[in-house]
Amino acid sequence: MEITKGLVGFLVEGNLDKMPQEVVYRGKELVLNIIGTTLVGSVHRPSDVVIDYVRQLGGNPQATVLGKKNFKTSAASAALANAVSAHALEYDDNTFDVMIGHPSCSIVPALLALGEELGSSGRDILEAYILGFETGIKLAKGFQVEVKKGFLNSAYLKGWHTTGTLGMIMSAAACAKLAKLSSEKTAKTFGIVGSMAGAVRANMHTETNPLHTGNAAMWGVLAASLAKRGVDSTSTMFDDIYGYCDVRVGNENIQKKAVEVALESDTYSMLNPGMGVKYYPTATAQHAAMENTMDIVKKHDIKPDQVESIECGTTNVGPDIGRIKEPKTAREGQYSMPYCIAISVVDREIGIKQFYDERVFDPVVRSLMAKVKTYVHPDLMTLDAHYVGENYITIRLKDGSEFKGHTVRNKGYTEAGGKIIGTHPHEELLDKFRECAGYVLPKDKIERSIELVDRLEAVPHIGELIELLLV
Image (tube, rainbow, N blue to C red):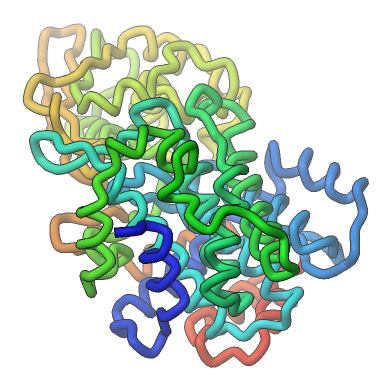
């Protein structure tokens, strides 16, 4: 089969009316979550730097930079700024269904920016978001490498940061759908964006990481807009020699049958195996270990000065993602398993306030970090990325006592079958949105935003929602 042709057909023919209501409902939850992380991210680095730069560039006032007062710029620049904000705090969402990345922080900002320029409805935005995401996941099926309990993404394993590389494909797909492009021009959109999709994992622990999402959102807008205007490109980007797939892992290594099966399936990956919403502003590999640590510490009332050592055994992906041993910035702390475990013991909670640069140098935290050992647990060595956070924690105290815990999945993520972990998942998501939006918006705008996203498919013009997101 031709992968490009199959993906184009799925995208162009897709329709919100054909989707299960559970998928539509989940899509609205995830859009709301990204709006929240964008708002809080807009007042943190590196977003403030990027927003200042975009302001200096100027531009035709087509779309709004969220969380700011009357700041409009070009749709592409607004997508860039808002997508950097969406991922600035590592607080967005995540999927491990062969992507291993953060899709919505690129897709949603691109759609809001382009949608504002085009005068799109809320229904159009929601439809394009879900289909753009699903298109990217179906492509990602071709990159799967089988392991003991599932699959890993071969491009990710080679060092590509799929949040940026696959996120850009998703963003472009969503924008092509929103712009109502023909099959021919949708294929050209993929052809254009395929040449721009570059992001490497070496920068994951730096402030360049959210630039990957900003670049993905910006080029999603640009690729669809340029294809609409007739810019030429290959029409078979995902099949060509030296194309998107070939350059990443080689066309001979792409699982075409898996893509074909995914295209024929009526399963929505957004629902099953599902998308995870982050409740801690760190790389996902640390989440379950932090929850495990906090459970042990609270249950046995363990104080930092009682600890002799902490061991964290996790998957083969975990220590790699959380490999920073001595973080010097909050951003590095988000990718440091020793820091995340140490701060879990000291503060017994993890939130935004745990990730400021000065907190990383707290002497009590630094002392405890030195006592944390991470390793690949022999029972978890060949798990797929869906289990990236599974871990065994052992805390030994100076008096010789020892406490252990095992956590498979963390709050906000999904178990087998797509069931979301948490006491009240929807209410917890709303609480997170209120926390994030509260950094820049008054309470009345926060509640009205929640109400509007809840009925997004009935909103005639996305500008109605955008107006509520201004300071």
